[in-house]
Image (cartoon, rainbow, N blue to C red; front, side, top):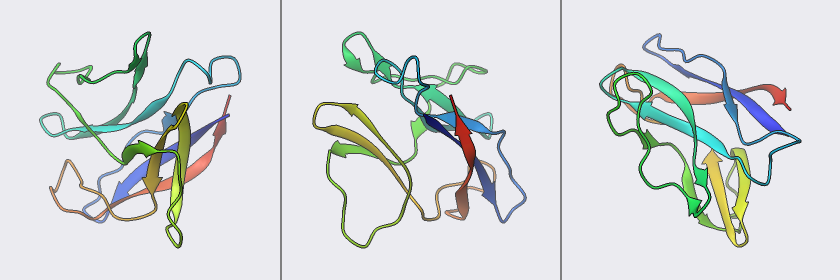
Length: 122
């Protein structure tokens, strides 16, 4: 079951609800994570898996410019004392982590945006 997140910043920026992870029928094949487009000043969810594994080049659906992801993809282990808003097993030994901390806002360009959990989707 995936998570619904929303990103909000003190500058007033707010994303649409982001469906992150995957659903009951596709969780082994699909993993969407949050990305931002500086040009369009928006936060979106983009699938990062393909047939070969993890997709490297992701683009904004609006302007087609490269987008950058939030969080990190690393070995499948948790750090002690760190709060996570979301995590997802991508493949054997690899996991996506989104810490509960301030992130870069594509609107004001400051590290003041946070992700909030809104519920689950399937």
